[in-house]
Image (tube, rainbow, N blue to C red; front, side):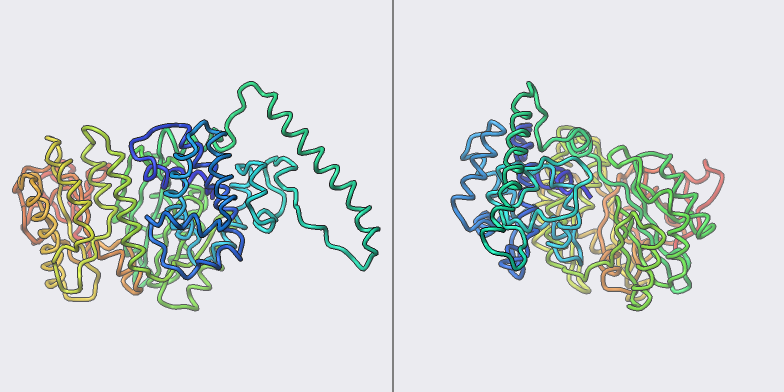
Amino acid sequence: MDITSHLTRTVSPAVLEDDRSPAKKNLLEQFYAIFAARLADNATYDRFANESITRDDQEFYDRVWTDSSQRDQIARELAGKHNVDATASRGLIAMAAPLAFHEIKSLAGTTPVPQFLHDNLDSYQHHIPTWASAVLPVSSLAAEPATEEVPIAQTATTEPLPREDEPKDSFLKALLPIIGLIILGALAWALLRGCQENPEPVATPAMAQQVAGVNNVELASLRIATDENSELYACRMSVGDETLQTNMMNALTAAFGDEANKCRADVDDKFAIDMPATAQLTTILPILKNVPNASMLIEGDTITVNTSDVLALDQLIADLKAAAPAMKVQAERPLDLKNEIESSLFAANNAMKNLGDNPDPSDVARALSIQVINFTVDDATLPEVNKELLDRAAKIISEAPDIKLMIVGHTDGQASDEYNNKLSLERAESVKQYLVSKGVDANKLTVKGMGESEPIADNSTEQGRFHNRRIEFVVDDQPTGANDGMIIGSDALDPDLNPLDSDNDDVLPDGDDATQGAAVDPAN
């Protein structure tokens, strides 16, 4: 897990907004490394571990570094290094700190944040400049040697070496040569850096720029779940090309047979074209298949699993760790509804900001689908918290002539099919009517209620049911009015719900299936 690259990709766009300054981006990336090292200190983290920190809490930075002289030094040093005004540097840091904290906490999952940061120290320690040792606890940098070469000055400690029961003078005499070597090493490294004509900024390794900056590529992912009979219950993948899609489908077919055909794919160059676990899927998937009512999300180098059976969950984690030792395997954290909603809106807003002029309809649909619209139980009233994002979406949809979207409602499996179909349609209609009230042409929007028929997670856990209760936006490339407002029935037309992929994955056969020469079985 490259923490600095991840934060650059997720947090920096929210801080910088339309400002594309490479200098400010590099400043923030270096700050993330210093910030992560500070949070790795247990004493620092414990001061606010139980606080409810909002994403706009710009005083949070002051609570992380309580010494004002250290805060000033960080802002001043970063400003000088990256040729940014010192006042602007202080403002960027204050904005970034609470956002980066939330993102790091999310990445850590159930692992304590300091432990997570210590475990991943090698991924950000080499971004930490020499001067930062004065504003960081020594414990935050204490770890096994990094896999990349790190200057001596970055690993030097200002704490006295552990001493035995020796006389004080003897100990100091033994320590002096070591201190001398450390100082000489630091001076030599600083001289070498100063002699380079065009040294690459510390915070911008080439790989991080490719992944997080220019291409803004998202991690490829696979989300699947099993039912009570250990059959494939739900399956979604997001991949960068058809090669990765094919490799995943081959592994799914080997594990689940024809059930793999129900897997839906979002194939788009906005996603990575590789995933670390791909080569091990033939080993990983059969392990999940043996566990009823289980779910798994593979994203990047992390596997997150869940099941309602605690003992089965522990065994599942142990088996996956043994099968994929290079992957991080973790249990899905308990549902934190407030954080899930805030995080989703934060991510959706970032995606909307990055759409640019004349956005692709699929990008608009994907950005809108990120948000969690958490309707009250048995109700279809649109929550207030989503209206600001939908206001922005309404402007984009109204101004772009080619955007036509279908709003699809989904529920969990806790009621009858008839009730869930009706409720999901009402919720989708509620979203549509709000957008129309904000100026969107009603002919640009269609709605559909899928009830519980298209799960993306298990229905046996609180987290799984939460994922299944959702509103999705998809590109509607069918003639307007074909089945607008209709709950799916045996004679209903049914446009392709995922036109981004290469599959015609209609829930029911319709006219475009005839060109394929085959019908698609109804979803469960």
